[in-house]
Every structure is written in structure tokens, then in C-alpha cells.
Length: 328
Ligand code: COA
Image (cartoon, rainbow, N blue to C red; front, side, top):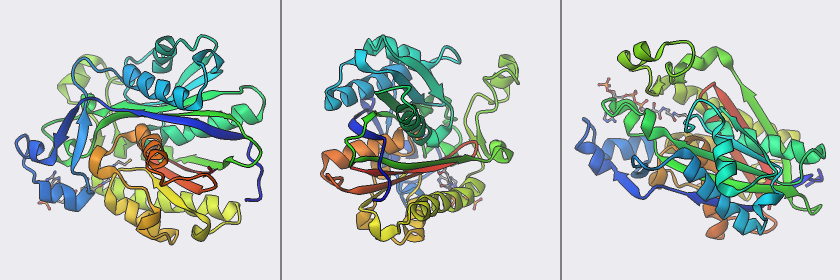
């Protein structure tokens, strides 16, 4: 790897709610089948928050696990960056609640609303803060309770999403391992294809509730097309920029939204599925939590080992997309 990294991942963690909702459970709720969901998405089950679960608590649990893995006391965290579009409240930032829960009293805490690309946006910010000398240790979290903004009567969306949080502690590189490069991008002309139209300042709450605008809306077929192109582009772009090819990648961690999008991304960079981390069957689409959870599992299962080159790629509402190259 030619470029010397400034920062590296020191520890990761994940957290999920207790309840699991299977495709068979969904068969009893909407006009769908396990067969359709598996064939069109690859999803078999997903974790679902109960009334007591909060995004902040899930994120704090994932963050705590990451700090423990990094053996870093919470007071040493200079910034908490939380990717979420389902925060506890509109403001203050959910990252501030997480800060309080962790006792990370010396940190600055803020949210990033980049939907499913939220974790990679956060990773880029963390790397930049460390490279510029503005921070030493940054806790990057992706966490969502998407099922709270799910329309459980819409079979085209309610079968897709799940709740979870994943986290990574980013600190100074040891000179060999670390974040080699990051790439982020967005296209604000396509906001309408994947969004929650109400809940902000544009539509008053009474109208938003009546018009079902407090639920996630998605033009699935359109989103699918853009996701395939953008994730392939983001993967190719970062490899080319660093004079690498798919052959140099030991593990691809794509955003876990749909098995068909994962297959297309792997094909675009010429990677066999053995070199792709896949857990969409167990979690569904957990938006910003998807990549850090996959990374945490991959490390735990030995799918990511010391010296491995990992390519991460994501796509989400905005549209936003991005990639990261990390040497473990
Ligand atoms: N169960 C059974 N049938 C369903 C269904 C469900 N849960 N959801 C939709 N259908 C039906 C549709 O009504 C349609 O029926 P029709 O042909 O009679 O009109 C048919 O299945 C095909 O629908 P379509 O929307 O074309 O399916 P698709 O193959 O595009 O798959 C998605 C739908 C949502 C799985 C797919 O578009 C997708 O994955 N999109 C991207 C989603 C995503 O990843 N979003 C997040 C990005 S971060």
C-alpha cells in the first residue's frame, strides 16, 4: 500500500435489540412470502426494537463495546460522530445522549444524516480530524431504529429494514495499518426517491401524520438502479485512485441492503463472493449500522485478519454514497 495512513481502527462493537422478526412473521402481517423476500433481497430475519429501545441506547451499547475492544477510556474520546436518520429526537443530536451514556465528557458530539452511507461519512470525518491534528480518538457510530418509521402496511418497504448499531474507535495510525483513503459523494437531485417527507419543518406535524409522511418512502426499483451504479462507481473510484484492483482486496464489506446489489458490486470489481462479507440475511437493511456491524462480525469471525486490505462501500438516501479502503 503506497499511502501512509494517518488513522486506524482500534476497536469495533455492535448492538442489536432482543426481538427477531422472521420472514414467516411478516407473512402474517402483509401479503408477502418468505420465498419472495429471500429471492428479491436475500433477507431472512431482522432485529426489531421494542417500545423501550432507543437509538441512543443501542448506539451507546455498540460504542461501549468498541471502546472496550480498543481499551480506551471514554474520557479519551475527542469526538463522537453518529450516523443516523432515526435519532431519538430532532434535536439535540443523538450523539449528545450517547456522550452522556458513555461518560465521554471531553468529546464533541454530533450527528450525520447521510442515511445508509452515514458510517462512511463519519469514518471520513474521523480520519480527517485525526490527520489535521484536531482530534486523537474519534468514536464513529452508525445506529438506527428504522422500524419506528416503517409503514407496516406497505409490503414493498416493511420487509426490508431492521434495527441495530455498530461502532468503531478511530485513533492515530501505527504507520502501517489504517485508513488508506475515503471517498464520499451525494446527489441532491434525487432526494425524493428515498426519504421521510414529514417530521421536519417543511410539513406541519398534523398534515404529516394524516398523509403518512412520517414513514419512510422509497421508489424501490429506481433506488435499486442507482444503488448498483453508485456502489460500483465508488468501489472502482477508490481502487483506481490508489492504483489498486479487486485482486488487492482481501475483503469487500458492502452496505447490506439487498443481495442482488451486493452481487452486482462484487462483480463490478471482480471479486468472488468468498471475498465478500454478507450478513443481510440476519439483519436486513440497518442503514448506517450495516457496515460497522459487518466489520465487527468479520473481525470476530477471523474473516478480517491483520494485514488484510478491506474495501467498504455504501449507498443511501440523499442520494449519498461512498467507499473506504482500510488496511487492518
Ligand atoms: N412481497 C411480495 N410481493 C411484493 C413485495 C413483497 N414484500 N413487495 C413488492 N412486491 C411485488 C410488487 O407489488 C410487484 O408486483 P406487480 O408486478 O404485480 O406490480 C412485484 O413484487 C415486483 O415489484 P418490484 O418493486 O419491481 O420488485 P423488485 O424486484 O424491484 O424488488 C425491492 C423490490 C424493494 C426489493 C427492490 O426494488 C430493491 O431492493 N430496491 C432497493 C432497495 C434498497 O436497497 N433501498 C435502500 C438503499 S440503501
